[in-house]
View 1 (cartoon, rainbow, N blue to C red):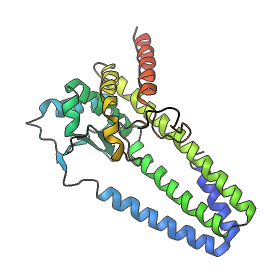
View 2 (cartoon, rainbow, N blue to C red):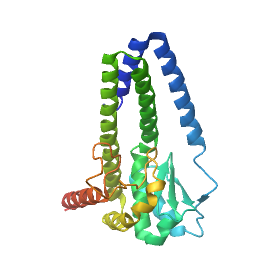
View 3 (cartoon, rainbow, N blue to C red):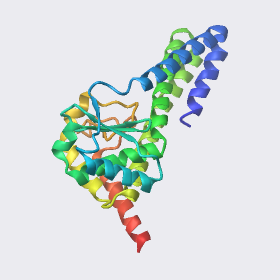
View 4 (spheres, rainbow, N blue to C red):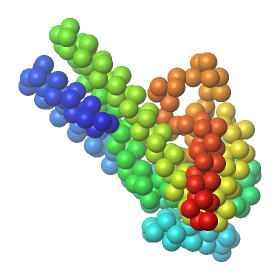
Length: 258
């Protein structure tokens, strides 16, 4: 569904606008493709420091061990020069902020890394950027239809865009839960992820300005007020939702082991 809706929008734009619609689609698609590859080539910034194996042997060995359990190639690990506790992944890379080391112990750091390994194993580091750029494409095409399309096309385009936002929210939330589930299978202490999330939720307001939906990360919804929070278009489940799922997955794993 996440890919069907953009396809329907594209067909409608071409049908409604003819050559102009095809030209708009080609130019928008070309620009977004270029942005995708440029963004991917510039992920490694000056504030990102490769992990020194000698200085942080426990982290290097821990992530290597978890990667083997996940049956994936060990990723490159970088430290982000930022006091805000945060972690994310892209390609076959994991980034852990220095602030993360201020609030979590070694077990908690490895639990967060395991979640990012789950994203890598599930190919979310490839899927999330595509979903984000499809959203930009939908916004562009919907805007064009609202300006130049017929009344029926305007209504249809708007419905398709809203439906895409809802499906995007569902899709990305499921991927977060799936990454947590993958992490539980490879951690020495599965509930260490639960404890890490319980600690990190006290710092979510600090991360409001650095949240990036195009990459898999530990970010939850920032808005604490459930009355003002839009449940339909949140792209990350809350800490409470993730912790509840982790407890459920842990019980299932324990049952299967027994």
